[in-house]
Image 1: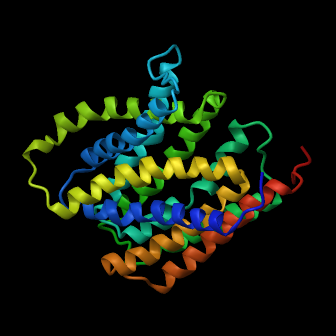
Image 2: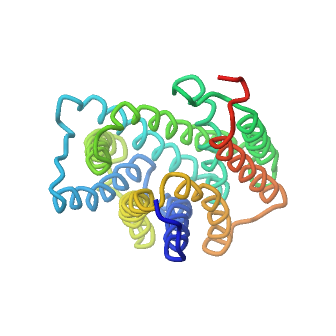
Length: 298
């Protein structure tokens, strides 16, 4: 791997901004679309650039090969369910809170990886990171100005969505030997096929009269945070490695809070700031643990 240059940090920041921008765009999309339709169209629009890339690079898409069950399962768990839960929750919760809640993914991943992934056992730094991150989330839920009895359940659904991302990531390890472009295209195809009839049957989107802002936000969600961001992530990963690319996790909740404030004029309380700091510190210690000896001596 080469030493990161200015352009690499610029691309990393761009990736963080694109992913962080998903939250306020989800909020805008919910003004006109139901959460299932948002999940469907986001996956559909996200599949387009990835499938085009596979054709351009002559990469075989194995969505309907003998491993189709893995692609379908990951499509459901890593795309359909979390996309639905996030959109469902953001209907009643500020987008900046969703950004912080979703940023807990590396922390919950650490817990699940301890039980299901070899050589990913809990160590001292991970314990510090887990405790810091979850204390931040708990503190955020105590903010009665932003999370009340009326939207508490919606906030929990966003947190649950982040957990499904982690489970989907663990399942992806089962087919990690395959090309990233093929895996991504295949799970996007299956995600589209699975959620499409559900959206048509339950929400009947043809009866909607969506605003232009909501429609543009939904198209943006599919093409950029779902499709192009993945391509950018892959380019950064290939050139600079996983450790460098993983730094994006620090920036997403920060940018998510800032964008929510400037784009949607969302409230930022002192508890939001404290929770954000705690979560970022938690992510730092979780990632620092990759360079540390295992606390349990394994």
